[in-house]
Length: 192
Image (tube, rainbow, N blue to C red; front, side, top):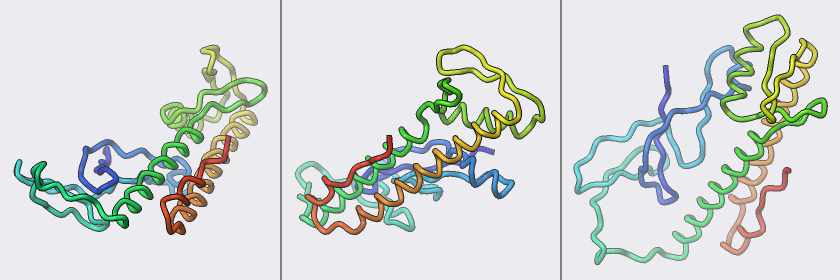
């Protein structure tokens, strides 16, 4: 079964839905599918509304609002601008985490593809076989991995994922501790 996530922009307004990604680390640990929930998304399905309405996530549920006409536009307060800047920074960190987490991995002087899709295929393959596997490298060549190599590569992938989430968590805490927009500029992804 495909699980859906419902995305919203930095102001909380619904944008679209997409398929949730399986968290390979938690799924393996719990022997069941656990899903990742990115920033600015929820598993709660939004209500269907008329064309005169928009829906906005308030942190715990969807709320309906009347669409504003351009001449009714209200300028945001400094506090609202700060919250928008924080949400934008959180989204930036989320994207940097994904970029780092799913960048290629060098193992045995060979560059291994490490995308969401390749991770899912890799873990599915290694969890369902006890023999050597053929695996495609970043240069499109193929390599045979024995059990020890599979285990080592698996550990590297899991460690990369753990490091990426630790860094993301550290930065989220820093973002949440900020008091001014200027402080947000000093918060940056540091893992390479």
